[in-house]
Length: 364
Ligand SMILES: [Zn+2]
Image 1 (cartoon, rainbow, N blue to C red):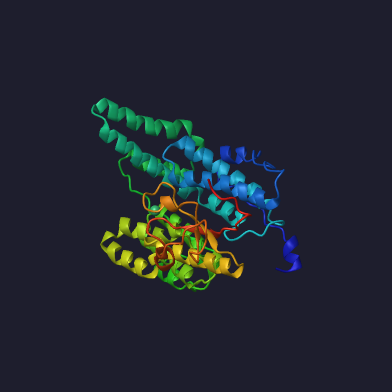
Image 2 (image 1 turned 45 degrees about the horizontal axis):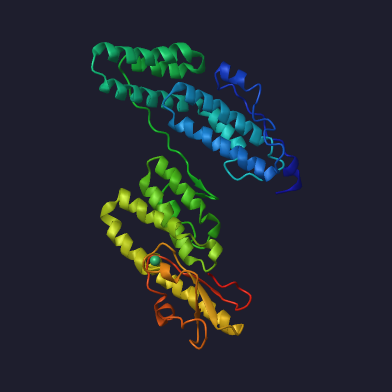
């Protein structure tokens, strides 16, 4: 970024696409300096959290108050975020880009909302027994939009509503939603596969993209994102670039749910690659051996084990102290199973530490 870019002014945003009452409500902004006591990073983070909350409703709301209220709030939040453009390096899409999108797509988004609201109304009509009740429900739909929210509708929205009224309802084409993951587009399987498996910067972003794809009903893309995330994690030798077991297993959970016929295969693959997820003794053994080597280095003969206290198999070893050599007067020899197999329990991992006699307090 050049010096000039720092002073570059964002072009003004035009709100002409938006109906007048919405433009009017944008004259004031409840989010203006809402988080003034925070650092810029925290402020941006908190504003984005608020924004994500509102944005969700734009895509999901089936009631007009929720939809329009959150649409306005989302714009207000982006206007506030946009004020930090010179102080904070936003990733794409920037608040400015998102603002433009919400402005330009107001009619489309609102048609999508009307469609959800209508389908939701039809569903509740189905459950009603009397014709009178059904007619009332229908009337309520049109009255609410034509009376209470008329000013919030564009001409195109009104035309769409009229077509519903004349029984010419056609569900609008769902808009292809762009899902971005860092600097990559992840809207096709191919795009996801092309992400290099050593780009650790997207390890967790891919998990987020998977959630977004899931929300849009694109389960194949969600699965592909999780698969890529797992591959990147497997490539990494650095613990900070590894997924947790729970994150890693999301792929299996998704496959089980959406392509169950592949679930067994996936399960075996993961078991082969990560036996430690299924048998905790593998990581327990690593932990105990590393403690023993530390103890030897520091000339101590005693180690303490920490297990799951409530477990009937490993619980009795919790906070117990053992002698490595078996020559200690006070503490028994560490059973060979801990060194050889990582203990007796495959469900719980064991933690351990060098027990410094005279310094560590022995447990009662
Ligand atoms: Zn156990």
